[in-house]
Image 1 (cartoon, helix red, strand yellow):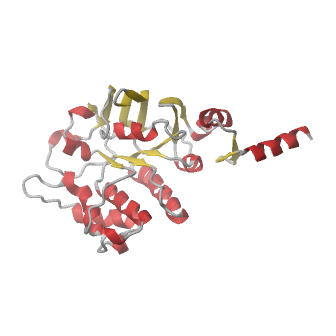
Image 2 (cartoon, rainbow, N blue to C red; image 1 turned 45 degrees about the vertical axis):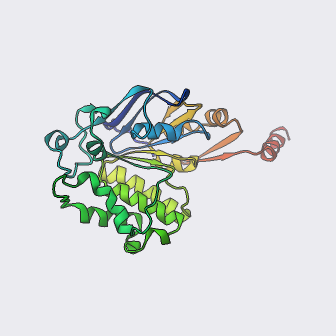
Length: 298
């Protein structure tokens, strides 16, 4: 999706992030913005640092260097009682590291690839975990909680499973339950790490539609790691391409997902077909490359 109007305001800004495992640096000087009402897709080969960068932006992986700033709404400065936050209100940026974990969790939610699933809990209870940062510290009150949980389950298609135990569900169903928990958190920034994993084609399509609806209709700033480049081309306003922990390209899908850039990044011949603005990306195995060469010299 390509927009022509002025760029929306940044909801989350990462500046020169460096992330490491021990002495091994895996993300180098990464700078990017996740903007209100936009979808930013992070793509790249296995081991390029996509998920680590996303985890760093969610404060789940410590920063070796760099800064993170989050736009805050008026309710952040005025209260710390867990009340709901306006998802489209982007105020002056604040250093993420100065926010308490609870306040940070009212502004940013992340769907990780792997989450420990508490045995014996119902779907409704799991989704309700997303309401924790909004509950009053003293009374546990959360007036908006029931409706937020109901809506999140409906959006992700797990409402009919509400009373079932999480232990009874398939991997794809569990994935949607955890996504519902993130949506129940009602944050203006949502980060998703390979959210279409374990989902069949129907739910992959519905999830991509949901991501676009959250950005377009609710102003949510969404950052998503995707392995499927066709999904990235379909759902994203902007794409960031990482190689060996460094950002090598950023822009619209048409600007970033080019044959030259992808062939260099993935170290294999890649064909990109632009069909009326809809990009189709596919690798070319050796047999296809030989056939193409034969067509060219015939």
